Length: 100
Image (cartoon, rainbow, N blue to C red; front, side, top):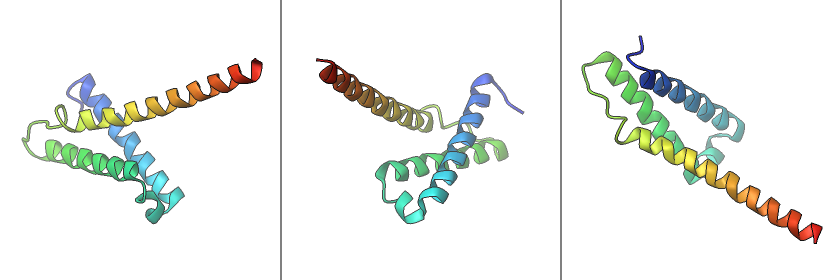
């Protein structure tokens, strides 16, 4: 079924991102979900990733995700990482300020 470890990870993460997208859509509602530019970007990446997987599995189309979609999915990770680092920095500053 999977051709390599990279394919297995790709399918796993696309599945997880798809589930995450639907949970957020349900929790926030469609109007509020799509009011965020990040959620729009996320939905676009997920939809194109699913389309890519379907096309690869049903036709002899070569993988496109290495150059475009996988890089776009990495942007999600960097955005989350940046957000976490900013929060940690703010908390550290508050702790230092309170302790002085």
